[in-house]
Image 1 (cartoon, rainbow, N blue to C red):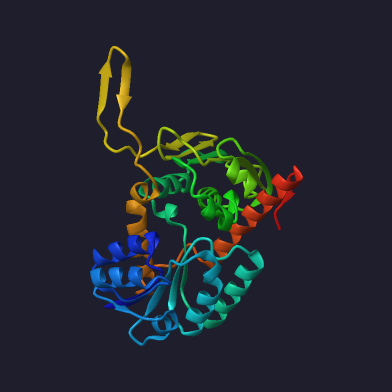
Image 2 (cartoon, rainbow, N blue to C red; image 1 turned 120 degrees about the vertical axis):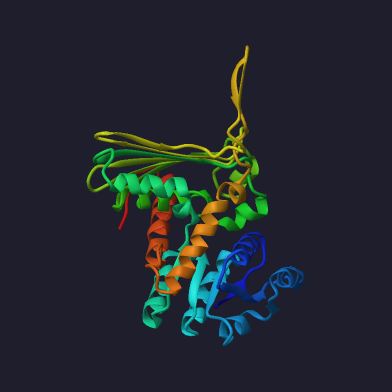
Length: 329
């Protein structure tokens, strides 16, 4: 039995707890949260103990920890957990600072603990299939990659103010997906962005609509577009164009029923938001984490993948600020 300590009992922590409750040979034994009522409510559902964070990490009854706390707490928790010899499952981003992520890499490598950066979209069955078929050469050499990611509505302004901006908060998933699909690194980034949805987002120093173009050393081009508003639902699409054809992964709908009338064809709306859309991905991600700890696979994406995505986000933010393409170190 693998015993896991859950740090953070908010929305994403609850998702992981629910997933683990449905798995065999793994359980949550201890939880902690800055809000005691949240910790006690989740602990009751999981049959876990409520402890202080350091006590969870250092408990002999905890083999691994899930870090589902606010990003500004990740750095210290990663260091404490690594030094305690615990396997680490860390929500993205690892940290808002690339330099601090490098320090996290140092402690993870020095202690030798297993580390998963939770880019859950890699584990979506559709995107994972897409990646496999690209690797199998079905469409030949990839030339163009297009990623669309649009939220139904903007997050609260308080969240925007501490999010690190659209590139580090929202598009970072797409940066990782682009690396995952292409299997090579980007050398140049060019970003444009606007405030078209909520003036308060602009007042907070962020944009709500953005497009980034990335180029690899081989010349392959990736275009990512993000919007904080999509009136027709959560929009998550990927298209890959290659020398021998095209692969495409479309949106997941509430159901597959269509109706045809004199007005034309219509179908169900997309899954409402990320919790519903990526339900299968969250489960596959946790299964992968547990299997890797048990020696049944290699832990991936790792802490270096967290740094690579952050560097692309940094480059995009710099490009937006300067209006110029940015070379990625």
